[in-house]
Amino acid sequence: MSGTVTIAVIGGTGSLGAAIAGRLARAGHRVVVGSRDAERAQEGAAAIGPDVIGMSNADAARAGDLLIVAVPFAAQQSTLAEIAPGAVGKIVVDTTVPLVPPKVMRVQLPAEGSAAVRAQVLLGEGVRVVSALHNVAADRLASGEDVACDVLVFGDDRDARAQVVTLIEAMGMRGLHAGSLANSAAAEAMTSVLIFLNKTYKVHGAGIRVTGNLTIPE
Amino acid sequence: MSGTVTIAVIGGTGSLGAAIAGRLARAGHRVVVGSRDAERAQEGAAAIGPDVIGMSNADAARAGDLLIVAVPFAAQQSTLAEIAPGAVGKIVVDTTVPLVPPKVMRVQLPAEGSAAVRAQVLLGEGVRVVSALHNVAADRLASGEDVACDVLVFGDDRDARAQVVTLIEAMGMRGLHAGSLANSAAAEAMTSVLIFLNKTYKVHGAGIRVTGNLTIPE
Image 1 (spheres, rainbow over the protein chains, first blue to last red):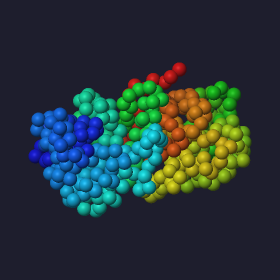
Image 2: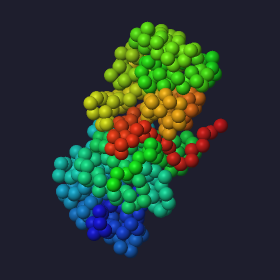
Image 3: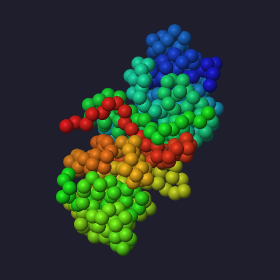
Image 4: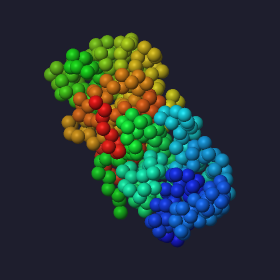
């Protein structure tokens, strides 16, 4: 994926979205950040980097060639409705984790089986949904340090998934093809487990790594 | 958990069950293995070790102080019915992964949300169900080598979960408290992802490790 592709980070003023936008901008990608409020998006964009542009989520979706959605589960449905007109024909990377407060340490997958499948249902067949970045701590990502976490990438379209794996690598992490969108349930559920582990073992930023000497095919 | 506790491995003639029984026997535990067929159980027990005893699943359940169930998803319901009378008042460790052939690389969680919650529903409130060992390759476990995989341990009863964490450590792995039985969905779903990773990256025995410098509390 070349630097001439524009990546729109929807919900780009939140902690995860801003961290994603920052990593992508530092990797040389053209980045726009969206927010429900265009003015807030402009402030957020300026804080991320001089070349980052802020606009409303709907405008950012139209401006981006590839969209990354980073919003809380409670905002997933309304946000996808905002971006749907601009998303047609594009890849949408959904990072939504179905955390249901107050019991965020308890796995509570949605009726569709995963937030990723829910995103595909909401956006319709004209959009290729890929899901990723469920298990990465936002502050680690923002810091530019090693996040010590592999990124499992899910999607029903192999080519779309491969583009996202490349993007994850540009962000300094190992991205792994992890199967169909239905498989996203594994990583989404794991986030509640990681929050539980953080609390139980009094650490911050527990993550997962896949063992078994996986080598990335050329 | 002392060596005077008898551990019954239900489905102990299968590849995972035999590997678990072998590790426990080598760790000095008193082990009985159960099978649907008592004669096959006796043959399997002899192959595992001289002090391992084989019997029917129902008899093994009565003989064990703690039970470990290692059967395919398709046999979970009938096996739990066999052991239910002998399981009352005991801890039952369910290792069931809800793989649905032929699509074993696709996450297909049961209606209950996880095989572990299904086990608790089937066995009833008189049994403390804990789930574990979903992501460990049976042949690695059988070999006695490092399995390169953490074991996430789930259960609604903290004391029961702690006993299983200790048992996992005796088997030479790191066991981690990973939350409620509902959270078992994360590890169960991860098994389909690991099978996908094995195939996609042409490896064998992909596993997961939790990062973040978790130290086990005293």
